[in-house]
Amino acid sequence: MGRTLKFNIFRFNPEDPASVPHMDAYFLEETDAMTLFIALNRIREEQDPSLMFDFMCRAGICGSCAMMINGKPDLACHTKTKALPNEITLMPLPVFKLVGDLSVDTGTWFRGMNEKVQSWVHTTRNFDPNAEEERMDNALADEIYELERCIECGCCVAACGRANMVPEGFMGAVAFNRIARFMMDPRDQRHNDQYFEVVGNDDGIFGCLGLLGCEDVCPKKIPLQDQLGMLRRKMGFSQVKHLFAKIMPGKKSA
Ligand code: SF4
Ligand code: SF4
Ligand code: FES
Image (tube, rainbow, N blue to C red; front, top):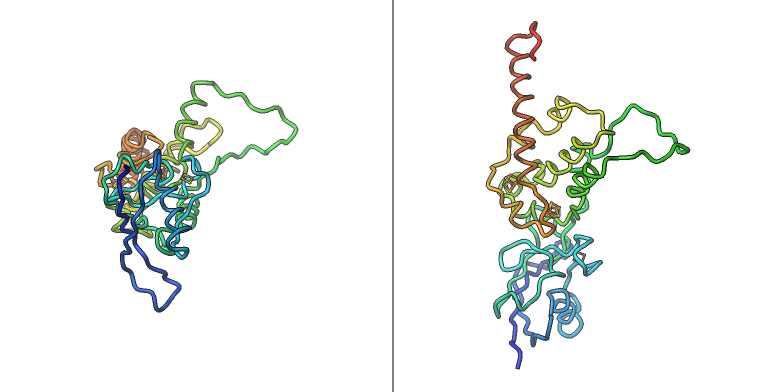
């Protein structure tokens, strides 16, 4: 006989003036290979059609099902109940705007972040639609792809102490990962000082507390720590150049 699981689920509809934040309890018999995706759908179909949560791909690809699972951000579709105790507490991700219950609006936050870090190739070259596709060294393409694997789930943002303190401002490790990706790309003509203008501040790399909660929770295992370290070194050098230029405005730094 399988376990009976108890789900404590956060409930609140910000659109309903009569709604107050509270927890509801639901019970389910665990089945083989049950995921939180299966469990939540069964609860909604069999017990409470008003329960709000997000899923799209069910395969760890779209990033829409991230939530706090027993206090830790993770993807609900790839979390097996077998890996969890009998009692499971589900909360929406912090930092992002709550849509209702377990559903949050990550899209607006990510759009703002991508605009802030100017997440596109900057080049003065004109686009020629008839030109042959440009070749890129395989090893470099692999390195860029490694950072491109981010699914914008928001787990690293939810786990970040600084992003929780400054939800509207702090860019988060996911933004540093984006910058690192464009720094690697030979088609992007920006130089370090231009990247410094974007991330060389307290909302960027200098606001990061460096405790690396972000990397620990990334479901795609993106090497966020390496990108943080690399950016810190490069931006630190640019900061020294900026300070030097302020102290000795007439002199050119190396
Ligand atoms: S290392 Fe920086 S970005 Fe990562 S969780 Fe800590 S403060 Fe946030
Ligand atoms: S870096 Fe990882 S945890 Fe952060 S948004 Fe991308 S996939 Fe999610
Ligand atoms: S539903 Fe797409 S990542 Fe979980």
